[in-house]
Amino acid sequence: DAMVIQNPRYQVTQFGKPVTLSCSQTLNHNVMYWYQQKSSQAPKLLFHYYDKDFNNEADTPDNFQSRRPNTSFCFLDIRSPGLGDAAMYLCATSFGWGVRNQPQHFGDGTRLSIL
Amino acid sequence: DQQVKQNSPSLSVQEGRISILNCDYTNSMFDYFLWYKKYPAEGPTFLISISSIKDKNEDGRFTVFLNKSAKHLSLHIVPSQPGDSAVYFCAAHNAGNMLTFGGGTRLMVKP
Image 1 (cartoon, chains in turn cyan, blue):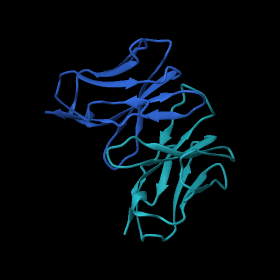
Image 2 (image 1 turned 120 degrees about the vertical axis):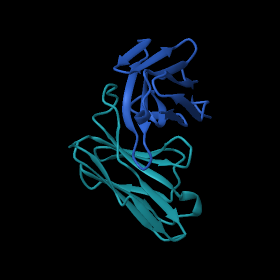
Image 3 (image 1 turned 180 degrees about the vertical axis):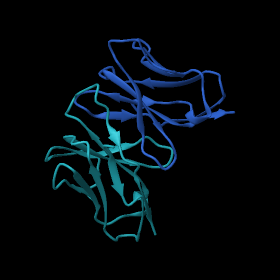
Image 4 (image 1 turned 45 degrees about the vertical axis):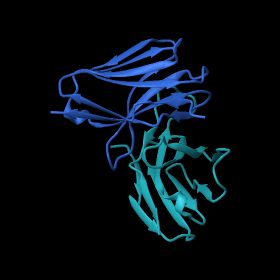
């Protein structure tokens, strides 16, 4: 089955220690997204890629970076995690841009804990 | 400023009865609305959607109603089943493919 796969499912890191979360997709979708979701809150978009074109949300902290080396993979790098960065991180994909009947497909998320 | 709001954090319904989940929005530029369902330890999965040019869309047990004048949409599940117990997110599109999510409603369907 075509899927969005996130690794690892659970990640524990130390305060200030860089961490990388990964996402891969077999859907061959052009657009990939990273969301942050804190407990009982709405998912919040951090950034997205349309092919290799990177788009940062205005309020995404500089501490968060992303890489998309090819169509299938996208990485979220947190350079110096703080306690406030503990959250569920969701990767999503979509076919094209502005295609209304093509909803975003989500991975199962990576839950990040900061010690 | 929350543009999409789900004012009920939780809802409990008896199996076989109707579940009604509500969502309000403030941005009149939203032109497409979706409902996602999320089980614990899983990502959201798409459930049903509606274009702003329609007022109703139905898919099996799930129906979404849109009232543009009130900037309100609702998801009806009939009949509710225990497997429907999950968190439901309302989401809206404006320009491009950007989604704005509501905070979610936890539905519990009791056997």
